[in-house]
Image 1 (cartoon, helix red, strand yellow):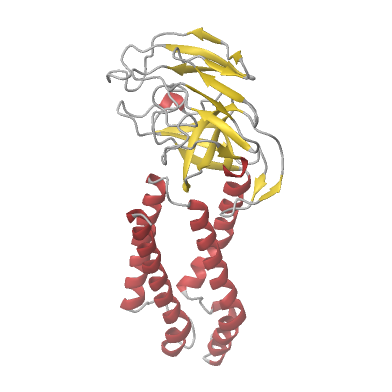
Image 2: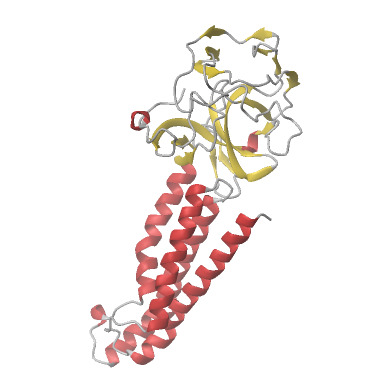
Length: 339
């Protein structure tokens, strides 16, 4: 378990304590001090718990936004389940008592106020459920965390990943419900890193199950003995082109299946070798060929090696924002289709 995991567990425990304090006040203490259920004032412990919960939620969202090793789907499922449970418990156990007590105190049933926690749960549950459904079965946002897919994708790009391109899967468990298509050579795909499924990687699919992939000293890729077509491209110009490993480096246009895309050759050693893709697995490479930990590193714990089909998350389709580059926001990348 990493330090990041420990921090997130601590935040979750703090959030649960705050929620419990708010619910205890709303369900147990409030009926005693406000039988008519019309008051809006909250005692300081409940207020403090509410403010603390907001602060914790903001910190958790920031960590989810910035760190790839946090399972956002799991967090959505937990929050959705908690909101639904609070709403259901109130409807089944506490609402009738609250209305009865309010009626006895002379308050019309329609004017009896819900506890704040119940009101928020009832309001947010449908929204969270909708976000969970969209993110699990339609489109999931993903932030590019490195240079490995340059010049196709840059560090700081925010992209949408199509979750239905290869099949509909349950959130968290990633269990396949319905197959909707097969990955194609050349697709840019987000997948769970096999050594650590909490981490998502994004690379280009080069080898299908059973393929024999070879990379020579000239960065020429061969699939099943046939060279993947490459034509020379211009010298790289773009973000970080003033760095040593990217200054004045060459690019090429590569044709993988139906995809014609640019690749680049950063200053550094070429990772050569021959690999045979096992059944049920895929072979991925970064478009930044000399600066990408990909399937060519079979035994590196930080590299994917051969990726099982069950680890595929979805197909990268479009860039929707970039705010995190050394050269400032790249507004022109908004709406850029990923090929």
